[in-house]
Image (cartoon, rainbow, N blue to C red; front, side, top):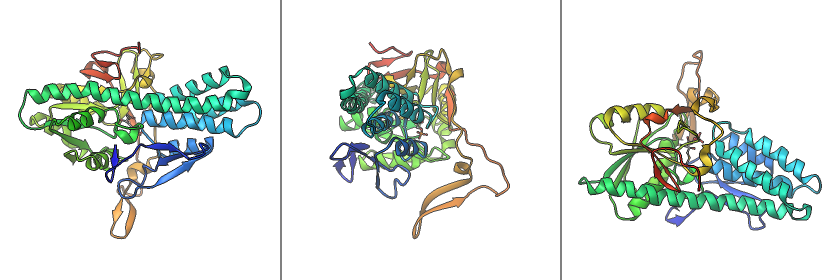
Length: 354
Ligand code: MRU
């Protein structure tokens, strides 16, 4: 997508392919900065501290983390790759893309002859990136037709509500939940996006609003609590969210607060779609009860980051003595989900990749 009018993806290799440049998502929208990753340790830390975030993106970056480990070693490459994969997979627990990507990497490395392991690792990391890019593009095409159909039935823009950031910043490009929105906008279909701010880390207010603004898409940031009211008032035609892990029955883990939006959507008769690449399905889990929910630091609730008159500021919101808790994801039961938008098309239930 675009930043200041120029095409941009979330990650790119350094010229000698020994490192990965990533956009530092902690400082957006106020500053556009990049960080260079060259080791598996730096990569795991960037994932843990959310320099990079979003399920497909952390998987793709973790792929490079495994490659960095192999690239720096001269012997025992299989063992080194496996150890790096374990460390990277542990950086964040909920998004299954992380485990999926490092498993792809280790399978390819273990199967390669010793002399080719490093080249194969680089090739595998690049293929994960190319695969996610292609899946996002196809999610956009399929989901875009959904928006097109709604647009044909009403006058004025199609109003879409989204939660967190499942945009291009959370993938390689296009996004998952936002891919259909970009597709529709680029096809000349009028759209307007309600952007949940997404406390406590405000990925909606900071990241989704930034990327929609850079692409010229009309949008309005709302407090997380406003969505139900807007749906009741007929001001939301469609909800599209992303996912961090979808169990075989369709139960969907996504950013905390997604479940409440699905409940409101069901009560108001608003269609609620989950957009995801096949790398986000966890076929080993029969339902959402087994999805690990990440608990992040309570300081993310106690404090809030912003831009002050002289630069970035962090301020305390909560009384010093009040405890706080920060579950980062929730699980929306499959029964509340109208459909899944994947690279294969739109379906009322999870479809295994063909
Ligand atoms: O904690 P985050 O910011 O990594 O959470 C991201 C989300 O919940 C996204 O909705 C999800 O990863 C889908 S990204 C295309």
